[in-house]
Length: 320
Image (cartoon, rainbow, N blue to C red; front, top):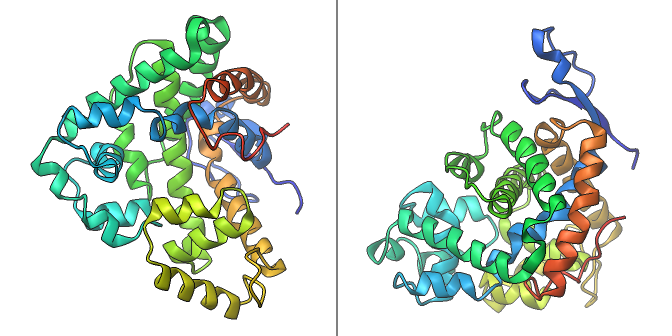
């Protein structure tokens, strides 16, 4: 697939390739980056946010509020920025979880604790986990610099709230002060910004949540056993969806659970569209700064992986 390059602005709305933006005084904010660089910048530091779903500090913090069920803690803590959201809202925003699993947790969680208490607990858990994982490097100059760069990208993303409900809810949260928490909050914003764009790309391909999940598993990027266990789909519903994807030609005929060539090309289109949708954030950085963010992110992420904060982190290697 040819490399895509676009011009993105930290102050202006993103426009598709080939459309000329109107002239404004702040066009000096314009930078040119590739969609591949945008993806690399996100992936390099994704474990800084993603560890919150695996570290013991998080469920312990939620249990202290009365949410002793891990699923309830997950759904409620991640959706807390939305306020006391309905199950339907969480199903829509989280996309690929079995609705029954969501309804077992939401809205019951809001009878036990409040979104505000959960947001405080989640940030405290991130603080504790990052302090444990980063150790003495928590105040290293490279982390401070990475936090500043990631924050610039995240704040640029905050200028593009349209069509991104879960991201927009997190964008309304206050910034923490300490650099390691600034980095975590920035990566949280960038993750949900990219995630909402990813859902749009999946919908453009006509995929529902379960179909998207199955194709993700068939790609081999994440163990399918983990996806099945964490998303809660009954075997009979999963198996029926797999057969339908075989009929559609996205999985090969037979028993082999891999992508067909058509399925692989579909996944490539989805990822490319997702990368392009993330450009309003990373396009706020000059190319040299985006490359610098990648450079700084490598050692930070490896430190967290070596500390065991993200068990699945080594499944897919860091991009070069």
